[in-house]
Image (cartoon, rainbow, N blue to C red; front, top):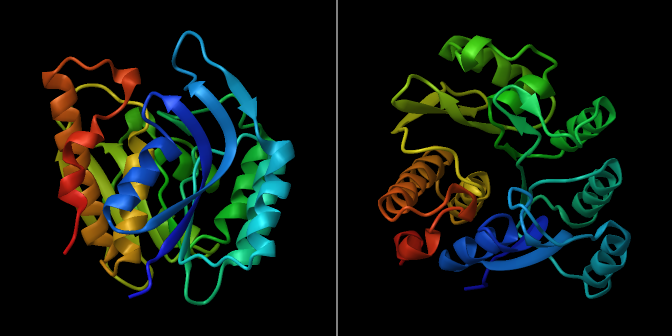
Amino acid sequence: MKQKKIALINDITGFGRCSVAVMAPIVAAMKIQAVPVPTAILSTHTQFPVYFFDDYTPKMKDYIQTYKDINLTFDAIATGFLGSEEQVDIVIDFIKSFHTKDSFVLVDPVMGDYGKLYKTYTPAMCNKMKELVQYAEILTPNLTELCTLLDEKYPDEGKISLEKLDSMCEKLAEKGPKHIVVTGIPFNKKQILNFIYNTGEDYQIIMSDKIGDDRSGTGDVVSAIIAGMYLNGHTLYEAAKKATTFVSKCIQYCEDNKVPNYWGLCFEMFLKDLVED
C-alpha cells in the first residue's frame, strides 16, 4: 500500500512543543509521511523570554519550487500560523499547485484567542486569511477566529449557543470549507466545548473537562490529529474525539508533573495511542 504524505506549512520551533515539532511526529505515528514547509525557524516560541527567530518568507518560494520540479504529490495539506500577507499568498499558490481532487486542505487559522487577535493580524491580514479559508476543506478555528472570519462580535465572556454556532458555521461553509471544528469553546468553569459542523448534516459536539491553563502548541496537536485521522479514513467526529481525548491525557500528565505551560504538551508519552493497525 502506498504511504500517504501530508505537507505541513508552519514554523519550525526547536523547544516548546509547537508547530511542525509536534505535528510531524503525530502524523508519523499514524504512518503518514510528514513533509515540512517552513514559514520561520525559531529556537523557542515567542512565549519564552528570549528566542531566535528567522523569517523564512524570502526562501519559501525557492524551497517549494524543488517540490514542483520533482513533481511531488501530497494526499493532504495542513497550514498553521502565518505571519504575513505574503506568506498567505505563497500558501495559496502552494495549494493551487499541489491540491488535487484526491487530496484535501486543512487550514488552522491561527489568528488569536479569547476575543483578541495577535499583533500581526491587521485588518489587511485578516482579509488575507479570509481568502485562504476559501481553499480549505477542513477548518479548525477557535471562537475568536470564527467570529473574526465572519466579521461578528466576540460574545460576552465567550458564551454562545449551539444554534448560533451552527448558523455561523453554515455561513462560513458557504465560503469554502465543508467541515469545521470550532475548538476550545468555554462552556462553563469546568468544561470545554468542541463543535463539529459537516455541511448538510446535523451538528455534533464533544465535551471535555477543563484541566489547568492553556498550553502552547495545543492547537497544533489538535489539527495534526484531525488531519491524520481524516486522511486515514475516519470521520471528522472520530478525529475530533481522538484529538480531544489525546490532548486531555497530555494536559493531565503535564499538570501531574508540574510541566510549565509554555513547554507545551508532553505528547511523546502517549504517541502509542495514535498508532493504528
